[in-house]
Length: 347
Image (cartoon, rainbow, N blue to C red; front, side):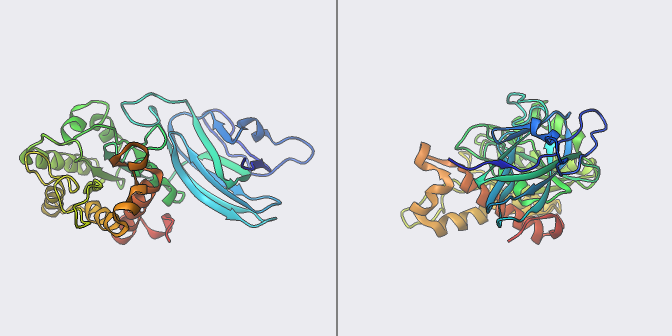
């Protein structure tokens, strides 16, 4: 059984102002934040919005602590702290309804944070409304979304752990969606578009479910999404789809199933690259990057990235795979100067 210790927990005060409370104990009386945490979970009764979270980790013994929240989003990777020491980490989290997939259940009101890791120790916590934040909106399908159930995980669900305070992920990816259905469902694009503010990034990865979409329609749909983001002052970023783990006998993924060529012969990654070039849109070629990673691991090693062992699933990723793929996205965001390096956890 894992050790879980809360040395000191400071909570937000409830109400519209949501003032912060310093992360320190009041000698001689219990910390007011203890009432917000139980069994490794801290709940803050806040309305939908964007919040900065600052945690103080560590205690008398050496510790290793991670933080996840809402619908299984990884917000802070496991962080080690020497015995008798404390470290402070900060991140920004998006709280919304529904809290996971836009067409899924509403989830629980407020902000729920789960304290994990191999030896968790939380010494303090502060939650305040984020006043100066940049959003990274995600438009995608089940390979990107906040998957509600273990062992599934979309790469967008793992992306927040690579971001520091000041940048948050608003993951509006939804299982089963194509470019056609995403544009057509009022709970999807019609909901996301008005939320985009000048300077926000909008990453678009849609292809896995465009199995019957012809090339002209697929291209036009991507162009519609790009134009809609720009009209709001946002920065569109086109992302080619992650590969399916479908090997040829020679150990390569050079086939239509792996590389997302649909039954009509539409090469989704190629069309996405073409639209990005024609519309001067930044491109993250996740198809090429995931292909290289999967091929480097080989038939056996790559199974752990997907849900092959659990469900013979070569499309959807495990937490390990989603985390690796989110890291590839993180690298491109930094390399292409789409997010300042100082706002990213790198290395």
